[in-house]
Image (cartoon, one colour):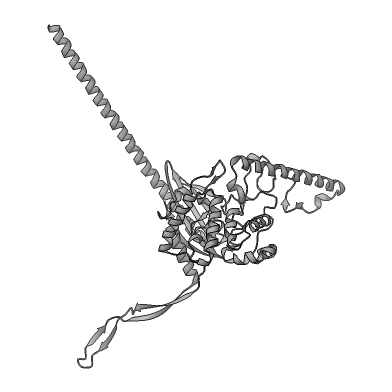
Length: 442
């Protein structure tokens, strides 16, 4: 009997011990999870502070050196594929295009090499002659030279140059450097090469049909469905109620009432005491220039278009993702109140949307793409002369197009560990005069 009681006591003790062990292990596991989470939070805070500091420093550097930004120089690409239609090519089609152009360039180089060899045989003093330059190519005998858009004849290493040389829409090659533990990347993009989203809410009713047609053309090219188009139109309609988008500006004068800064004093004839008269309002005529109005609209729309009023997640949905390209509708939308499209730097679907205002949009876009690869357009008159048969359509589109970009964005991204900080600086450039539109941080 006593042995049974002892077994029961031992069993109870063992059960209690097991329960205590389970409770203690659970507590230890929970405590370790909390400590690990706290370490991760502390690590993230440290990383984010480093990334934020690096981003802010890079922004200050970019703003301090804005005057050093030269006018972007367009490059000629006579024997290269154009960047215009890359947005609609999948990776297989993109590689086939590069392979095709690589083979074509090899044929050009082989033929030119044969001609050079014949010249050397027929002209023994050819070494003293001028450097060879055929069709704008320099150093054509270099076997590694391929059409100016790569230094290798391997199609897997090729990239299609943009209007300024780097990939579209970059104006210059992105700059990368380190600030402490953070890696910083600075990119400059041409906003006039994108579809101005402000066109959708222009206050000009006479072109409402053309605006709708151009916007729908752009969206169809970018595979934006009808539901997303209607949703975006509704969001932009709400923005237009806050501030309508204007295309044309003229200097305006208005009368404002201002208080005199210093009150006047007068002496009473009866008492001989001085008394102070309160400041009196006076009317002042103030002139607001067109440039000031444009800058104000750009700043306002930059804030509105980057606010929660527009759902950019659907527009940022990737249509093509590869090692060299990431395509989405948002990539081709100008969200900084740019008013004109640069015909030298805009891709096909943006060009077609711009020339919808005048008609023959697809034909004019094709003509522009073929011509600008050889020589970029210098001005709109140059465009009219080259495309004389479309002069009437071009005339209707003059206020929507340009040949020189004025609006640019400087994107700064800093990454430290798992933390990331970024900022976008919008600027307008008119000659040597640079005006900051806004700085948006995230």
